[in-house]
Image 1: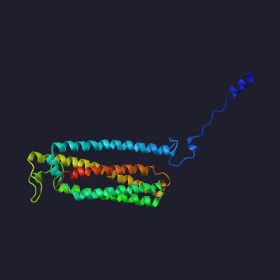
Image 2: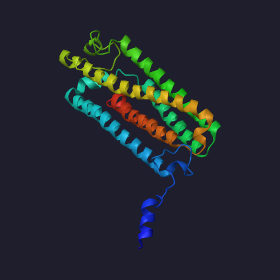
Image 3: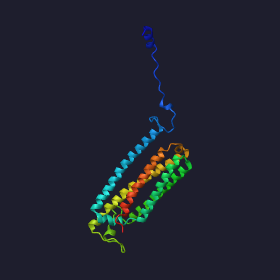
Image 4: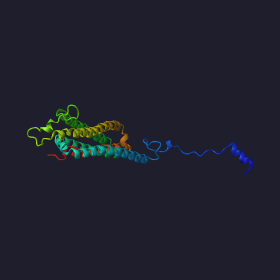
Length: 252
């Protein structure tokens, strides 16, 4: 290497290699800058959603475990208390929720086939069915309040110590009748947390419905609809377990 060429490299260093910025790549508008492809973003979001659902399964699993444990300890009290819950209202809510799961699944399909009108129809139907579920649940809660079966200072065991005339229930001893409050504590905790998930889900549904007006979810960007569908189906599955546990086991 000659002295002149070395001097030239010092005074005029080679231009740095220029890589095309990720921002200039040809990618969909919804792809975030830290993902190489839209498919990678979709898989990452789906994986995150499943992790979230796993934590939810562990949370509800603890409640179900508590229910099974106390049911084993206070079996007669749990049977008598569960017989006071309205099966027709619970069954109606089960049908409503399963139907909402179907409309949500159809909403995901509508987003995937890029049909904006059908997507909005199915999302709106899911919202309406969600409100119907909460309305029926509110009626159930009101009945328990009127019967003084809400745990607390006004809780009454009179119906379990002296069942109403014509009832198929057997009178419970005083100490076992007091344990019915444990059943109702779990009943309101489990159904209340489930209802909270429904309220959150309906709020998200309304946002998705509003944003769907712009056509954003029928342009190939279906990830939010798909992930929310997983959430809604999970809430439905939880109820499928709650219904037989709280309403049907050992029913007359």
